[in-house]
Amino acid sequence: MAALWSTRTFVSTVTRGLRSYGTPAVAEVVKTDPLEPDGPFVRTEIPGPMSRELIQELDTIQNTKAVSFFVDYQRSQGNYIADVDGNVLLDLYTQIASVPIGYNHPRLIDAVMKDENRATFVNRPALGVYPPRDFSARLKNALLSVAPPGLSQVQTMACGTCSVEHSQKAMFIAYQRRKRGGRPISKEDIQSCIEGKAPGCPSLSVLSFKNGLHGRTMGALGVTHAKWPLKLDFPVPDWPYASFPNLKYPLDQFVRENRAEENNCLEEVRERIHVWDMKDCPVAGIIIEPIQSEGGDNHATPYFFQGLQDIAQEYGIPLMMDEVQTGCGSTGKFWAHEHFNLREAPDIVCFSKKMLTGGFYYKDHLRPEEGHRIFNTWLGDPSKLIFLEEVVNLVKEEGLLERVEDTGSHLLCGLYEMQEKYPGLLSKARGVGTYCAIDVKDVETRENILHRLRQKGVNLGACGVSSIRFRPTLLLRRNHVDIFLDVFDSVISDLYS
Ligand code: PSZ
Image (cartoon, rainbow, N blue to C red; front, side):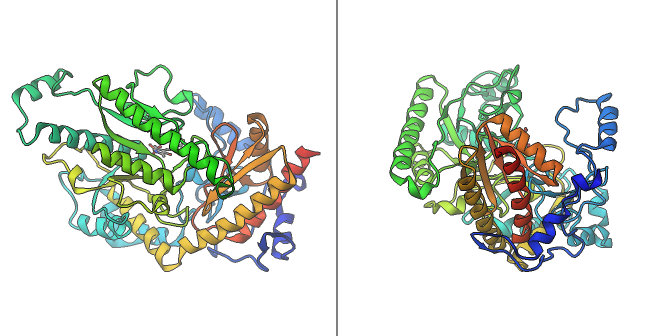
């Protein structure tokens, strides 16, 4: 039985340098992390017996329908996730895109062990009221040292949704402040807002894009237009959304068609702004993902984003880039919007996931004047800044952005070869850095492929209608990609025959 599930053979093929996807395979496994295993190891079905037992137990307490398998985090290392049944999988999905430098990275373990960090781990402050002495230094070292060019204000938050929600509030506050034109907040404003009525609670909206996902709280759901389980049964605000460009890939082969599509979408943005203005629910800001992620890894070109910034500026409203999933290096630039050559920085950039803390960078004009306006109890967690500082230092010291670019081009070449080899089944290989995806002919086949990949020691995720998406750590190397491509080829060839 064990032999049936074992994938060790793939590793030896790779290390002998027998395969080549576009570029020569490495002769030896280059170890990113000395503790990382040489390859996946599968000894049971996944989820295995222990996972199934734990799922059953948990199911008596909460709904477990989304659980894949139970994890042994102690034994997970680098790019490999270990489950409770003794299986070790190459993890190309990494906790829904949120592990920057692998499991149990020695630098993070060292940070936990340091005496001087103990108080930060043990005491969780209400950061807006009782910040620790080193808080500004930590913000500077961790967050501002990688701030998107042109943004120097930052607010931490607990998670991605929370960051989006509070960014929207920053936009609404700025919008109303401008509308008041210097007039102080009135008694009527204060009275009416407590009752949830105008003028204190104005009718305002945020424009977003079809298939976008920005989070699950009510304001974030107002700009989220993907996957029904997020929205069904909730009284979500009725805000405008425009179509996100539906481009043909590879982008450089369909420039003319794609330009026309992007122009149509930009026109739709203008039209939507106008319609909501007529409805007396003016658009106070625009939110967009640089690569639409949950919605299917949909890309748009710099032309589109530049055009969107022009529209935002024309209407005098902020443009907010949701980099919760794209941020922190996996596109080969620290922020995905840096690929767009925008005339100036977006007004707001939200982050979370690989950044380990949630939050948002913003321009000065979005800074609230009063205290307690963008506020909650914790406002994040400074212990996450300790980890982020290590991540940021590693990115710089080890040139991880260059590595992502190199590994990513190798991965994309491999995906192009696979779609050529299996036409009708695989299509639309696309990506920037290691932020890659490929489409499968239908959703059932996609689920089947993901299941079989897992049984052979590769953990991957889905997005959109029938796409597979890659969200590895920043430490992934070509030899990991080769391991994946071998497994992928064997899974697909089984299905194709
Ligand atoms: O089902 C879900 O709630 C999921 S699955 C993946 C996500 C959410 N991604 C989170 C996300 C994101 O991708 C973007 C672009 N913006 C905001 C969010 C929300 O972040 P969290 O989940 O940290 O609240």
